[in-house]
Amino acid sequence: MTSQERVLIVDDEEQMRELLAKVLEKNGYQVAAAGDGAQALALLEKEPVDLVVTDVRMPGLGGMEALKSIKELNPDIIVIIMTAFGSIDQAVQAVKEGAYDYINKPFKIDEMLLTIGKALEERRLRHEVTALRHELRTRYHFESLIGKGRAMQEVFGLIEQVAGSRSTVMIYGKSGTGKELVAKAVQKGAFTGAIATKVGKFELATGGSLFLDEVGSMRLDLQAKILRALQEREVERVGGTRTIKIDVRVIAATNRDLKRAVEEGTFREDLYYRLNVVPITLPDLKDRQEDIPLLANHFMQKFAQESNSAIREISKDAMGILLSYPWPGNVRELENVIERAVTLGRGPAILPTDLPPHLAGGAGPVERALAQEATLEDLERDYIRAILQRTKWHQIRTAAILGIDRRTLYRKIRRYGIKSNDQ
Image (cartoon, rainbow, N blue to C red; front, side):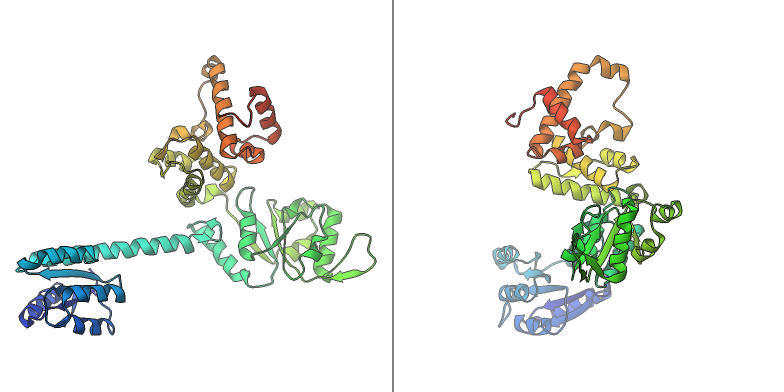
């Protein structure tokens, strides 16, 4: 109970109003009173109330009519009905129409206090759940990024600060940490250009944003062209004779240490300072362990919904394995692991057996694997077929889930004679 919880007593008997008001105030509630439904509604339009205790039979506007009007005014207000023995059926009907509960007159004070306390506790819990869900959608989610730890909260804060500006942003992070998601969050509609071959994208992106991915691997001659475009705010078309003015906001990303690249002479120092105006660094997943359950459950719900799977949760033992694994492939690897688990799991929970063996330290002794070679081949064939069917024969996505390249996948498909019409 909090000092802000306010109860309205509605009864045409003054003695009943005074008795309830005295008891409730003694137990720490703020109390207001009204003699009938009309007075109660007039008060509710002016003052906040958490819970209403109302008699059913009153002159003028009775309890049933007041219930309907209260719920129309504010569905969040709890209504408890007081009723004499002869109107229990009516009270039951009131519960069906939105009342929290009903209490028979005459009642015991302890019974009334217990019902009010229980109702307000449920209301508080409901509000907490709503607030937590909102926090998950807002504080812990930024566009498609998810994280509640300090590192990701700092990233979200930087994104909010730079989203409305024209400043150049440099995103650092290892493969799979979500650099492109940050770029999209910094400015929606960013035009993605492959820097190795499409410098002309500057012209197409004028008036908007250009995302330059993996700038750390850019050739030195291309670095010079990019630098000129940023300094002069102009470009030349290939084979052209005139310059074209551009107005582009650049968002760049790399998985390399650009300071070291500058020291090693593989990245221009002047371009580094041009790009490194607002640096945003994405942490490795192993350094944000508190986000693993949040991410894992997000991916589980996503893939279960997509595939109409019976999976609804991640078991405690499976989550323990996820928390103890170092995640060298970062968030992308976690996403692939959860997609695999949802595909193979029978539900209702993801179990340790649904996770790749290497997450728990290996699949077992080599001797046992050799002794079961035929069985392992059968399992591999069935698994590959299941993933292909799950991805609707999208071979690049299937290879990513399996953790192999596309050519290896193609060889295995041929080796096992797997066909698209296999069931």
